[in-house]
Length: 151
Image 1 (cartoon, rainbow, N blue to C red):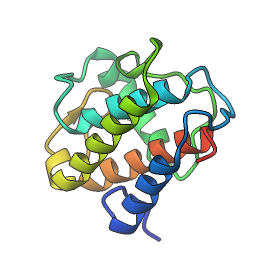
Image 2: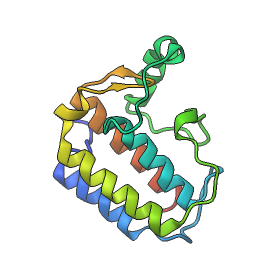
Image 3: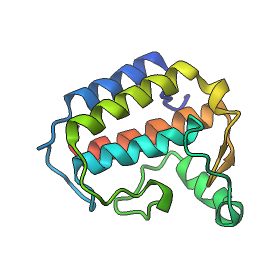
């Protein structure tokens, strides 16, 4: 059975609908981020596939990236409270509506660009990724954080 992909129109619409229905006061089930910070975090992670970060794969990525990539691409859901890459940590206060709008815009662009576009980008932690790996990893990340906020 194929893994879910953010590039699949039905899966994309389901994720987008969950984002649209998310409210600032949705209960947080785990973690340190509030809802606006989580939205900014998802956007920053998504932007690694939009060439907006300018990040390169560093030494940590070269050494640990293959192991972390295997975990990310496994069928197992993310565990709650996993460490977050420093380039996508958000600790400052954010406006929920602004962050939600920015994330929806980035999501739409990511999907419109398509997997062949993302596959040209070297992920700063995981290195070279296929279109399928980009699509699944983004779906899994969105699903994890939307469940975190009951969406």
